[in-house]
Structures are given as structure tokens and as C-alpha cells.
Length: 156
Image (cartoon, rainbow, N blue to C red; front, side, top):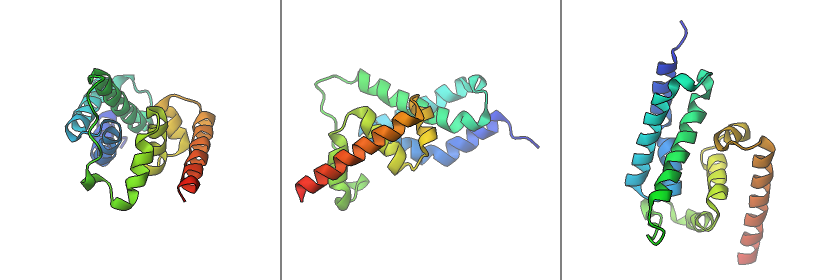
């Protein structure tokens, strides 16, 4: 028996809710805003489920909607409003320098690293989510890792 799009959507939301929250949190740094972004993404995906041709594309579409909802929230914030720092409970002390490094990156670079190394998504899926060529994903990751290595060596 073939699984319906609706069931794939429900299964995806249940299986990836923590991942969606982490992605939103990495952009928004606010638990309430991250929850709102995920909720908005789930609603948007449900409303547009008929537009998704392939059931296998539902997870990537849901992640893309989460990123878009988080970006929308960032645009609505006042430019002078300070972004809350990462809460200590979300990041282990040994990862604090990584969080500091990530917070200093441009949003698109930070998101790329988070999708690849925190969420462990394949480059092809990242390219689909970010709507950029796979080669661009690969070259940006390579450049970012080279910069990170240089920064780490500089600190030592």
C-alpha cells in the first residue's frame, strides 16, 4: 500500500521536529521565535502540500519553509534590537568558541555550516533547501572550513 503525501508529511514533522527547531534556533537565538517559525513552516508546508510533486521532497521543503519563516522573523525584528546570545543550556562549554565563530558569520554561511555539520544533511539536499547549485555548496563549505582553520591556528 502506497503512503499518501499527507502521511509522509505527518511522519516527517514528527521525525524532524527537533531538527527544524534547531535550525530555527540557530538563526533566531530565541526559543519562542524558533517555535513560532517551526509552527509557521509546518502550516505553510501543509497548505502547499499539493504543490510538492514528489513525496521525497517533503522533508527538504519543510526545512526550506523553516529557514524562510526564521528569516521572515529576523526581517520583522527591529534593527536596533539586540539578538539574545545563545543560552548556556543549548551549547556545551567546549563548543562556546564554535558558537562565537558561527555568530560572527554571515547568515547564509552560518546556515550552510549548520545544515552540513549540525544537521548532517548531504550537500545535494542542502543545495535544494538553499536553492543554490551543489557545486556552490561544496565550494562555500571548503572556503568556510579554510577560514575556520586559519582562525583556529591564529588563536593558537
